[in-house]
Image 1: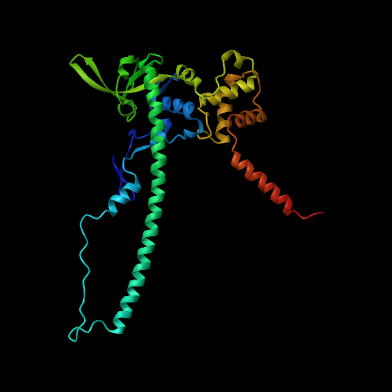
Image 2: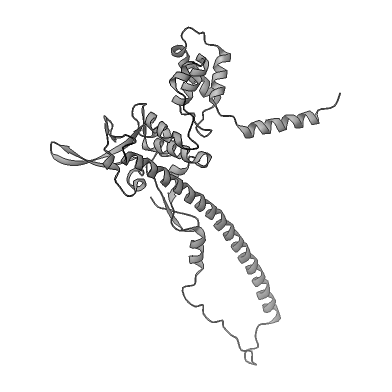
Length: 321
C-alpha cells in the first residue's frame, strides 16, 4: 500500500504483514523456534546494539527524499509570462493616489503571507527530511541483518523451517531455498513465501511462514559485539532458586531490552503464576515476588534521575529548623 507524505512523496511499508508492529500476533510455532521477524530482531540487536531501535521492521521503501521532491516541485516547467506594462498618457493617466496606496498595502500583506508560507514549508521539509534519513538508516540496518541471516541459512550454519500459513506441522527448509538475490524482498514482506507442493491433484502453491531455531540462532549471533550474554545451564544451576526463576521468566517472556517490558504489576503476576511449579516447597512471599519482578525489569535511568533531582529540590525548599 503506497502512502503519500505531506510533501507529496510516495512511500510504502517494506513489510506488509498486517500485525508487524505487534509481536504477540506474529506467526507461531513451538517455543524452541522463532518466526523470521523475531529472528531478524535478534540478529539486528546483536549486530547494532542500541542503534537497533525496534522500528526497523516498520521501515518504508521511500525512494525520493523530501528535499529532492521540493526541488522538483520548484523547478519551472515553462517560462513565466512577461510583466505587463502600462503606458501613462493623457488618455491613460494611471492609478490614483488612493489606488496606488491600496495596491501597496495589498502587496505588503501578500508579501508577509508569502514569507510565512515559505518559512512553514521550509520547516515541513526539514522535519520530513529528518524522518526520511532515519528511515534510510533503519532500512540499511534491516537489509544487513536479513542478508546475514540468509547467508547463514544458505551455508547450512542455521537450520530454517516452514509452516503453512493456515497452521500445522513445522518442516525443514533446504539451504538452497535461500538462494535468492534479495531475501528482504522475497521473505520479509509477509514473513515467508509461496512454496510449490505436490498434492493428489498435482502441484499447487501454498503460502508458508519461516522459522529459525532459537537456541541455534542465539549461539550464532554470540560473536557480535552487542550479543546478549549467554548463561549456561551448568552456571544457572549454581544460582539461587529465586535468581533462577527471575532469569527463566525474563527469557521466557522476552524481557531482553527496555523496549520489550511490561509493568511491574504484570511481572509480579507472572512470578506468582510460576511460583508453585518453580518452588513448590517455598511459601509464596510478597517480598520475594516483588524482588523478582523488580530484577526482571530494566531500570528507567531518566525517571531515576528526575526523581533524584526532585528530591534535592524538595530538600532545598524545605524550611530550615
